[in-house]
Length: 119
Image (cartoon, rainbow, N blue to C red; front, side, top):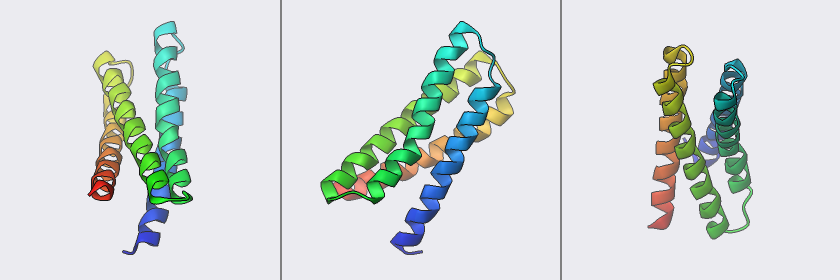
């Protein structure tokens, strides 16, 4: 797979992930406590794909790396919030675990890309 194909696949993957996060957030109860988590997870989970699209349209290698680091950070934050939801047992943990597994894979991808760019 070449870089263009990889980029397109990752753009699609992060967009699907954002949709999964939005659907998860919408399914959570509207308690005061969960509203905070819903807001945070919606922001971080949708930001990954948006920043990756910006990275693919960056003006320099430094700009690209900066956006990739943001993707990495947002993916890490999303993993954190998903772990909190699982620990709270506020919904079917099996469905959250599937999203968490995808978040960890996305985090690993951006961590790998970031490390390669810094060499």
